[in-house]
Length: 205
Picture 1: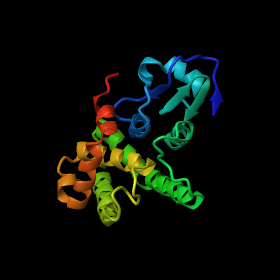
Picture 2: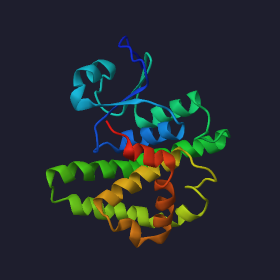
Picture 3: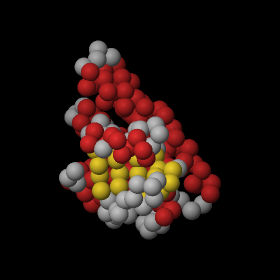
Picture 4: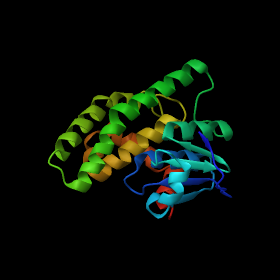
């Protein structure tokens, strides 16, 4: 957390454009809350970002004089400050399980996704190997997608913000992936059709 002397009149999210799945997670959470915000690309605002975030990475979120970074911290702040509709369970045990699952999604899946996006830009020979490994991991968890209406929950949650972002990027990488697994395809079709998800995709920056 950082208290900035750079004033923002509206909530502002600094992102890295398409190659930034973490910012995509935050944007879905904001859209679920029906919150208006400004999106700024870091390449156009690198000087400001250096003053706001000592690590100079995205997403960086500014709400008045409060500055936050890391998607999991930003999304929890959004959910607590704007509690309707809730994206985290109230029960402390379920909340702890949710945090742990998000941590694992981030560490096990998003880290690999980031490698893939970076390797794709550099046309690396290792790209296919990373893609294959990630797709295998997702496929191995496919039964979890049908246990409840949303991912291990009766209601849309922050977990779905992460999972839907992952699946959307995967279909951009491998357009046939979702069609190979009906369970995952049905889940993604439902999530991608949500107003919040469509709003994020259609938002112009």
